[in-house]
Amino acid sequence: MNLQIAQLLSELKTKARTSGFEIETFDQIEKWPLMALSRNSSRQGGQKVYISSGIHGDEPAGPLALLELLESDALPRQHDYWICPVLNPAGLDAGTRENTDGLDLNRDYREPQSSEIRAHISWAKQHIPPLDLALHLHEDWEAKGFYLYELNFSGQPGHANAILEAAAKHLPIDTTNEIDGSPASGGIIRPQTLPELEEGYPEAIYFQQQFGGLNYTLETPSGLPLKQRIAAHKDAILTVL
Image (cartoon, rainbow, N blue to C red; front, side, top):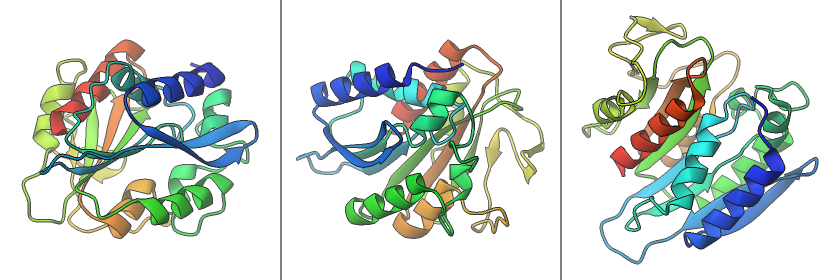
């Protein structure tokens, strides 16, 4: 599915402003802006939350889920948010996993080669505080059900089971013992230490190293209906907030 990227970016800006978010363009990729949305709460006891999507251009459910959450002003007001809704706009425009230079941006965080990730890292270092929670919205064309990666080295109870329960209202859960080459249990990939990946670091590992907190990569199966995938992402996000 190729998104109408100009319309998506315009609607994200409009709905974000209506929901009280500030909007920053931290780089320009071809004709597309790289956007960051932020909203701080004056309330006590909230979480510091980062959410990203659209780093792979053939994974539309994440950006569309964020658009719907912004449109309905559903993100609870007690938290502080930093959101990067479309990290690979040129890829989304083309419907390709990689950017226009053929780079997988989600393997570019160790020694960044792309303009997108260099700009994203620079922005994050300037704006992101130590986090309570990071959510990275993804899709997997090979998956037969929803699954997630949990990076939790805090000793705190995590949100993995609650996320799976929320997603299971809309999608089957991938219960195989190995997913994407990693050991899995009941739809959860939970490494005991940060993986060392020869092909480069994904965003989740970089954010775990730099900002800590509970870190989740959510994967919907892109072979199933888009409406269900969007709904699963939305419910998973709201469950942990």
